[in-house]
Image (cartoon, rainbow over all chains, first blue to last red; front, side, top):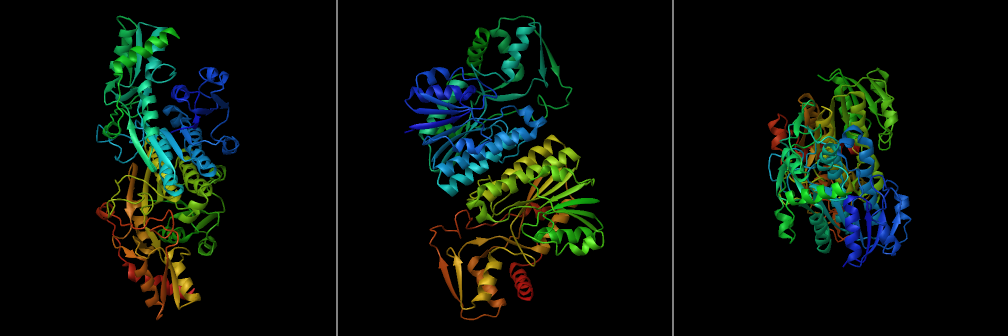
Length: 316
Length: 316
């Protein structure tokens, strides 16, 4: 039973939903977020009802984290530099937030005797370009972006810290999570491009890239399910749907939901890279047998999820 | 053909031999070392003959590394915090030297267009406690010490940087390297304990731990062989012998070489940990098929190596 949880990145897309859900379940929540990618919009109601505390701290600053006086029994670590492209153009900033930041969270656990950690990892980036699709968790890690390297590096420390200091750590290797409140990613970009000019849509790459997506409500259920079933030591799960969808099919689906007609797709392959850009993994597909066996499975189909998300974008 | 090499940790045990060998081959060498674990003793002759340049810099300081005016075509990155025990008691220092330090070396390559890197990784620590012995390179990484986590994390960045910035990187996942000039490890400790009191020897753990060792001259040959055959992108090799020896057998061998008799072995298992200490991997054995296929294989048996090393320790 979780009693007192710290959620890093609790003002972000996934984090804000997780905070809502934890508070619904009667858990006391403290949010740490530097507001680099979010606002306190979704947190305000919880602060007003004294259900959540908020610290505008940066996970790069361990002393700040250590100064929080609360005795946590769980950390949900979601704070991250989320953009693969930025990790390629600015390796240093991604390293500091995603690798050093996660190391700081582990140091916080060790120094303050916090026994449980749920870490938001990545399935889409840590395996690189795997020969085996769908890819299982024990496939060798060979990231092709610094974002993927950071998530994989962070897992290495989750493994050692869990073993050395008797911690319980589970890593959710997340696919591409989408849904309301998300303000980046291919669906978000396509919607805004089409909103601006409904006659045409430029797609990075050849559009044949197929990726593994997961709708936000399924994602939150995976977080609560795996945190309730956390075990001694370190473990990791691919958390995604086992559906995959190509970029062109995503574009077609969005065009349909937006009721557009005669949209011309153009494909920008000038980068000479088969993915959308260098560092992008062109095809991902996750083997999710392990997480299914644990008792969680996705409920919302990708197409249904796209419909919900595009309607939310249209109305917000 | 290597022309101009930077060797980090070039004053250390392995690094100093590597510098000797590179200079023998007519390669211009620059050494960066903070002298935390070595001295310039072995480098002096090369400095005097203008075969090597030396910078007492720390790999944690990227600006210092960037200030070196030489145009390198190769980096051999061996600088490290080498002690697994210290990584357990002081995770921060190990993280900064081994993870941040290696990230800095990769940033140096990216910023100064240095195309080739040979990285001294670890086979004995990155796999954790593998179910599969001998362990091949594609076995999942699950380190149980922060030293292992750092070496594994560093490899994740070697993988992403090689892919993103068109670098050629090879990681030598080294076993326990031993031989003259080494000033740490179980053989060094046993020799000094026995030198002080030849009647008894305290062994950490039950003595049944078996590990994979490699003699220094074989190690240096692996470095030169794999650097001469470096390929585009990222690759890694277990570099060890395929012999394994138990701690008790090492102790017996040292007792023999030292011509001691009636030595009482005591076993300190007070830590309750089956290895020597928490974070120590009790049994390692490397599958070295991949590196054998590349054309390198170990030549010095462990017992012959121990004899050389103990004789060197006795005479130094």
